[in-house]
Image 1 (tube, helix red, strand yellow):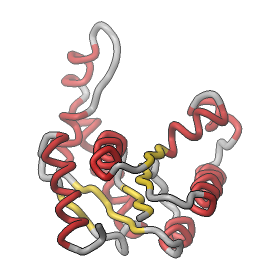
Image 2 (tube, rainbow, N blue to C red):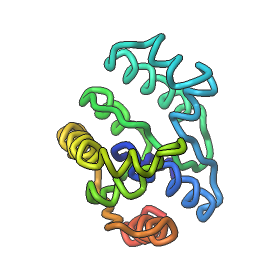
Image 3 (cartoon, rainbow, N blue to C red):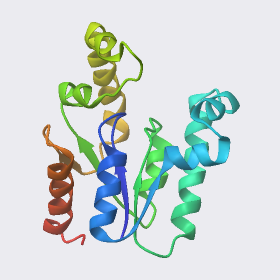
Image 4 (tube, one colour):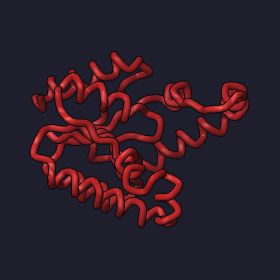
Amino acid sequence: MKLLIWGVSNIGKTTVGKELSNKLNCKFYDVDEEIIGIYGSIDNFQAIFPNDCDRFDEKEELMMNIIGSENHDFVMAVSPIYSTSVVEELLDTDTISIEIVDTPEAIYDRLILEGDDALEYKEKHKDHYIRKIKWDQTASFNEFKKIPKVHIDNRNISESVETVFNYLKNNKII
Protein backbone atom coordinates (compact mmCIF):
# COMPACT_ATOMS: atom_id res chain seq x y z
CA MET A 1 0.00 0.00 0.00
CA LYS A 2 1.23 3.45 -0.94
CA LEU A 3 -0.74 5.81 1.28
CA LEU A 4 -0.83 9.58 0.80
CA ILE A 5 -2.06 11.58 3.79
CA TRP A 6 -3.50 14.96 2.80
CA GLY A 7 -4.70 17.86 4.92
CA VAL A 8 -4.23 21.51 5.77
CA SER A 9 -1.17 22.83 7.59
CA ASN A 10 -0.82 21.75 11.23
CA ILE A 11 -3.53 19.08 10.98
CA GLY A 12 -1.04 16.37 12.03
CA LYS A 13 -0.14 14.67 8.73
CA THR A 14 3.50 14.16 9.68
CA THR A 15 2.92 13.05 13.25
CA VAL A 16 0.04 10.73 12.39
CA GLY A 17 1.88 9.51 9.28
CA LYS A 18 5.05 8.61 11.20
CA GLU A 19 3.12 6.73 13.88
CA LEU A 20 0.95 5.00 11.30
CA SER A 21 3.99 3.92 9.26
CA ASN A 22 5.51 2.45 12.45
CA LYS A 23 2.26 0.58 13.15
CA LEU A 24 2.17 -0.71 9.56
CA ASN A 25 5.92 -1.42 9.58
CA CYS A 26 6.58 0.54 6.41
CA LYS A 27 8.62 3.51 5.26
CA PHE A 28 7.54 7.10 5.93
CA TYR A 29 8.05 10.12 3.68
CA ASP A 30 7.33 13.73 4.54
CA VAL A 31 7.25 15.90 1.41
CA ASP A 32 8.38 18.97 3.39
CA GLU A 33 11.37 17.06 4.81
CA GLU A 34 12.24 15.79 1.33
CA ILE A 35 12.19 19.41 0.09
CA ILE A 36 14.45 20.49 2.96
CA GLY A 37 16.82 17.65 2.09
CA ILE A 38 17.07 18.88 -1.49
CA TYR A 39 16.93 22.67 -1.06
CA GLY A 40 18.34 23.12 2.47
CA SER A 41 15.23 24.80 3.86
CA ILE A 42 11.65 25.68 3.02
CA ASP A 43 12.76 29.32 2.72
CA ASN A 44 15.31 28.36 0.03
CA PHE A 45 12.66 26.32 -1.78
CA GLN A 46 10.27 29.28 -1.74
CA ALA A 47 13.02 31.64 -2.93
CA ILE A 48 13.83 29.35 -5.87
CA PHE A 49 10.13 28.83 -6.64
CA PRO A 50 8.39 32.08 -5.59
CA ASN A 51 5.24 31.21 -7.55
CA ASP A 52 2.73 28.83 -5.88
CA CYS A 53 2.12 26.98 -9.16
CA ASP A 54 5.83 26.34 -9.63
CA ARG A 55 6.12 25.07 -6.04
CA PHE A 56 3.12 22.77 -6.53
CA ASP A 57 4.64 21.41 -9.75
CA GLU A 58 7.97 20.81 -8.02
CA LYS A 59 6.25 19.02 -5.11
CA GLU A 60 4.32 16.91 -7.61
CA GLU A 61 7.50 15.92 -9.45
CA LEU A 62 9.17 14.98 -6.18
CA MET A 63 6.18 12.89 -5.10
CA MET A 64 5.83 11.23 -8.51
CA ASN A 65 9.51 10.25 -8.36
CA ILE A 66 9.02 8.65 -4.94
CA ILE A 67 5.79 6.93 -5.97
CA GLY A 68 7.36 5.64 -9.19
CA SER A 69 10.59 4.42 -7.63
CA GLU A 70 9.27 2.91 -4.40
CA ASN A 71 8.43 -0.79 -4.67
CA HIS A 72 7.43 -1.25 -1.04
CA ASP A 73 4.61 -0.02 1.15
CA PHE A 74 4.93 3.52 2.46
CA VAL A 75 3.03 6.35 4.08
CA MET A 76 3.59 9.89 2.80
CA ALA A 77 2.58 13.16 4.45
CA VAL A 78 1.68 15.48 1.59
CA SER A 79 2.44 19.15 2.13
CA PRO A 80 -0.54 21.35 1.23
CA ILE A 81 -1.11 21.60 -2.52
CA TYR A 82 -3.96 23.78 -3.76
CA SER A 83 -3.81 22.99 -7.46
CA THR A 84 -6.59 20.84 -8.86
CA SER A 85 -4.47 19.56 -11.76
CA VAL A 86 -1.59 18.52 -9.48
CA VAL A 87 -3.95 16.82 -7.02
CA GLU A 88 -5.77 15.05 -9.88
CA GLU A 89 -2.48 13.70 -11.28
CA LEU A 90 -1.42 12.40 -7.87
CA LEU A 91 -4.82 10.78 -7.33
CA ASP A 92 -4.38 9.03 -10.69
CA THR A 93 -1.31 7.12 -9.43
CA ASP A 94 -1.13 3.67 -7.87
CA THR A 95 -1.72 5.11 -4.37
CA ILE A 96 -4.43 5.38 -1.76
CA SER A 97 -5.27 8.86 -0.48
CA ILE A 98 -6.99 10.06 2.65
CA GLU A 99 -7.48 13.54 4.03
CA ILE A 100 -7.26 14.12 7.77
CA VAL A 101 -9.94 16.60 8.87
CA ASP A 102 -10.46 18.42 12.16
CA THR A 103 -12.00 21.62 13.48
CA PRO A 104 -10.13 24.94 13.14
CA GLU A 105 -10.00 25.20 16.94
CA ALA A 106 -8.41 21.76 17.31
CA ILE A 107 -5.85 22.59 14.61
CA TYR A 108 -5.10 25.89 16.36
CA ASP A 109 -4.56 24.03 19.65
CA ARG A 110 -1.90 21.86 17.94
CA LEU A 111 -0.10 24.90 16.51
CA ILE A 112 3.37 25.24 18.02
CA LEU A 113 5.19 28.56 17.92
CA GLU A 114 8.74 29.07 19.15
CA GLY A 115 10.18 31.87 21.21
CA ASP A 116 10.05 33.30 24.71
CA ASP A 117 6.64 34.89 24.26
CA ALA A 118 5.20 32.27 21.89
CA LEU A 119 2.20 31.30 24.02
CA GLU A 120 1.25 34.90 24.67
CA TYR A 121 1.72 35.76 20.99
CA LYS A 122 -0.33 32.75 19.88
CA GLU A 123 -3.22 33.63 22.19
CA LYS A 124 -3.10 37.32 21.25
CA HIS A 125 -3.36 36.39 17.56
CA LYS A 126 -5.78 33.48 17.95
CA ASP A 127 -8.44 35.08 15.71
CA HIS A 128 -5.85 35.53 12.94
CA TYR A 129 -4.75 31.87 13.15
CA ILE A 130 -8.34 30.58 13.23
CA ARG A 131 -9.15 32.69 10.12
CA LYS A 132 -6.05 31.37 8.35
CA ILE A 133 -6.96 27.77 9.18
CA LYS A 134 -10.51 28.31 7.91
CA TRP A 135 -9.09 29.90 4.75
CA ASP A 136 -6.83 26.85 4.23
CA GLN A 137 -9.80 24.54 4.70
CA THR A 138 -11.87 26.55 2.22
CA ALA A 139 -8.99 26.74 -0.28
CA SER A 140 -8.48 22.99 -0.16
CA PHE A 141 -12.18 22.08 -0.40
CA ASN A 142 -12.41 21.82 -4.21
CA GLU A 143 -8.95 20.36 -4.70
CA PHE A 144 -9.46 17.68 -2.03
CA LYS A 145 -13.13 16.89 -2.75
CA LYS A 146 -12.32 13.49 -4.30
CA ILE A 147 -10.16 12.42 -1.37
CA PRO A 148 -11.89 10.32 1.33
CA LYS A 149 -12.09 12.16 4.66
CA VAL A 150 -11.04 10.77 8.03
CA HIS A 151 -12.27 12.98 10.86
CA ILE A 152 -9.95 12.90 13.85
CA ASP A 153 -12.30 15.08 15.94
CA ASN A 154 -9.75 16.67 18.29
CA ARG A 155 -8.30 13.29 19.24
CA ASN A 156 -4.76 12.96 20.57
CA ILE A 157 -2.08 11.44 18.33
CA SER A 158 -2.56 7.83 19.45
CA GLU A 159 -6.33 8.06 19.00
CA SER A 160 -5.90 9.78 15.62
CA VAL A 161 -3.57 7.03 14.43
CA GLU A 162 -6.11 4.42 15.58
CA THR A 163 -8.89 6.31 13.79
CA VAL A 164 -6.91 6.31 10.52
CA PHE A 165 -5.84 2.69 11.01
CA ASN A 166 -9.44 1.61 11.63
CA TYR A 167 -10.59 3.52 8.55
CA LEU A 168 -8.00 1.67 6.44
CA LYS A 169 -8.93 -1.66 8.01
CA ASN A 170 -12.71 -1.15 7.76
CA ASN A 171 -12.37 -0.17 4.10
CA LYS A 172 -10.19 -3.24 3.41
CA ILE A 173 -7.21 -1.11 2.42
CA ILE A 174 -4.97 -2.99 4.86
